[in-house]
Image (cartoon, rainbow over all chains, first blue to last red; front, side):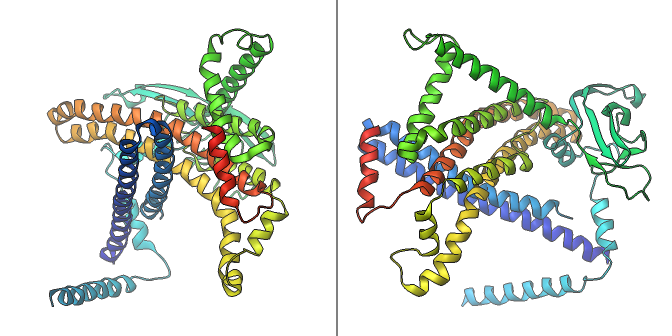
Length: 81
Length: 381
């Protein structure tokens, strides 16, 4: 039965790690899109670059917050007994 | 065709996992406990997970470094500042230094000892009395230091302004650093979101901004406590913001929650009502988890990069030394990002609190609600 128990623990660790990896993909895509939109807008109108930069950082923090929710969920999957 | 094959194979593998997994359900989970206890590495070996978690968790002492003595482990030099432990039981208050528990934390003192999770319990396992741990831990000390810095710095600067420096003359000293920040919070965070009532909320917004910022920055120093990465700290901040938001709500706000305008009746009752009610709670909850997760993730990343040196070092000394420049370069890079994240997270928390207060304060608006926001942008540009 220790094999089954090992499988349980292994599955929970696997789930946590895969979840964190998927969250990283989501964050990468999201923040990449934000960066793309911001850089294109600055290219169109350089004098607005300060406003655009402030909004970009704000929105990036939101997306990163969501990705870190998923990281916390992954950590809980690994650490909970 | 191939996709169908893959689907069948996936279904078969998944079912196999389910069958094996369901066969292990028992009343007493002894096998599981054996495995998780053996998951820790053997005595003396490197345990990076434990090192990282110990640095992130609260502790009863400030531990800076340890110079190991290979021959006689008891003579290792621990550079620590032990902090007072304060316990309230039915026998009264007990105050003593945490060094009484010994360097490994395994000694007993006055009937108390530390268990595996480093919590204070009675040494007698049969004792079921109430025990209230009110100790001054690392986080408490760092919060107090941040509080002293906050009060001294900001009231000192305010006194200078009262005397006229920076009002009739150019700003001097710390005024140069703090004035742009305060102006930023007032003009970019408070005024756009709160309109005319920004004066009532500006003290709270500035307090929360500077408190989170100072604790974030202190948490980056080696050896300091991880205050903002502690869920208890962020929960308290989030709950205070929640009450500030709640006390600024008006009838119009609750009218929108319970009777959302502009949607069909069934959608209004069965979808918008639960969603809007939940939304009142999820917004502060997101504030809490966002700050906590960002800070703790940053600390874990920095600690992991440094631990990588030792993980490689335990494989071979050459690998350890060779990898260390790379690891230190990564750690410095992440450190710089974490300094930026410290400012950004303080700003985000303050900004979102202001946005939610603004949403709660909103008065009755006519159909041209979008145009009123445009006026804000023109004025503040």
